[in-house]
Image (tube, rainbow, N blue to C red; front, side, top):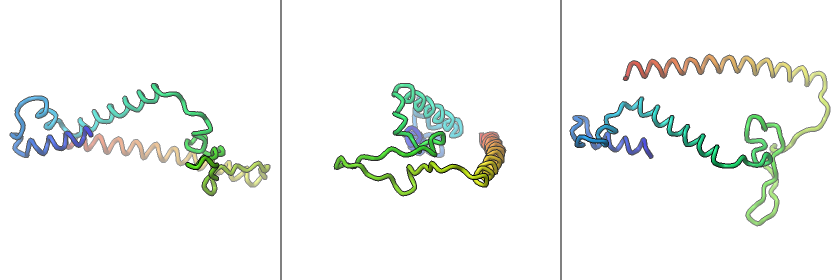
Length: 141
């Protein structure tokens, strides 16, 4: 909503920057778009943290299977509009209880090693994104 408002103000102000009279609206319309993006990000973070702090934590069974921490936990059964239980979608909530074989343990170890490589790759890619954003900011500011 804030971004759309700024866009409309910028369009009303025009390319010659004479469409709005001096004041708050003109200042918002002429505010650098990169700086405005940072302001919007900060506003979103404040809202996110504020709502998280103001509301109670959801029951654990409601978030089972939704977060990385609970990805391998069974999903709670859902209740339909008619009040009857609905079965979880195929593949959800199926946690095996069989014992692991040596081969499965070796595969899990390999998965952990790949996971560590993936984390390092993600870190380098994230650093690259930050560098690209900084370069865009410097060039277009």
